Amino acid sequence: MGFAALALGAAFSATGGNSEAGLNYVFTETTRYEPKAWLEGRDRFPSGATLKLVLGETRRALAPGFSASADAAVSDDGSRVLFAGKQTPSDHWQVWEIDIRGGPARPITHCDADCIRPLYLPTNEIVYTRDSSSIEIAGKPLTFAPGRYLTDDVLRDGRILFEADRGTQRRELFTVYPDGSGVEALRCDHGSDRGEARQIGSGDSIFHSGNRLARFTSASAVETEVAQPEGTVIGPIAEVSPGVWLVSLRGRAGHLGLFRWNAAQRQTVPLEASGVQPVIVATRTPPRQFPSALVASRTAGNLLCLNSRISRTPMDGAAVRTVRVYAPEGRLGETTVESDGSFYIQVPADRPLRIELADAAGQTVRAEQGWFWMRPSEQRVCVGCHTGPERAPENRVPAILLKTIVPVKMLEVQQP
Image (cartoon, rainbow, N blue to C red):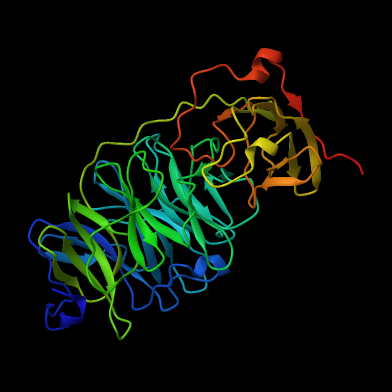
């Protein structure tokens, strides 16, 4: 059944829902949702929003008394819900927690800017986005580069999945560990616009790629197509069971409806007349805890590249002779690339960094367009420049480590 054929209103009860027995979920009831408004520092819910809880045949406001509420995340034991809320229209969004059974909401943050998209971590900590410009845990940032960010999900391996602004209304998906280390693109094929990602039970990630849903599967280097209902899917999906999702669809008149989509049957069943951001209320296996090895007293990190001459996109790798490292204020240093493409450098922690490869004449062969960072005492190894996280390294000792085990220090901006 196509979305255009669905008659919103006629399919819903007088209370606004057509809930199925045994289906428990939270969703954001709203008439407008602008998923990329955060890229411009605007509210994603310009007409307000209200979280609704559906438990089988019953439904109610999850957090009554709030001027606005959205961005629900359910705890691993299914008993609590995190959300972003405003008590009055003039308030900043703050992170709150409430029991599924009801009762007063408990404030988690007291931000001087909007704090949104909270997620539970397996350590009982909470990660969220502050002012669309940093990702934080208890006020401590995990992101150390300029730009805009938005939390999406916590993966089963413990990494935090987030969106980053790549310019011209384009988002890309990245991951970072809960101590801020290991930041990297989820995949390096870099689509036109990727966001609103959720991991499903198979381990795959389902996300928006332009105006369609797409999937990343295991070690696949590129996104793949996914069966989806007719119409425009908006916001993240929620998995009910394999091949069965809750999705929000935008109709021709701009209405947002929440539906149950069965891929095998190619069937779309209406649930809510106005809703986005569905989250299933159920228990789940907690993600893995990440054992951080950072030493806060240190001020630098070490980066070993195994072969900077390889790339998953065309590049004249044979021409690469040197690597340069930049901070926003200028160049930190330059060093020779070994015959096998390896190099080993030490860079300042918690600062924006960018790498550039050059040939024998000093001309740029490949340069990063965005920034990354390293944490204090972080020891990081990359397979190659722009090879993608899905590529495994060759089983050999890099030439730079046969030559020295001391990294080239690039800790201060060089004076002209």
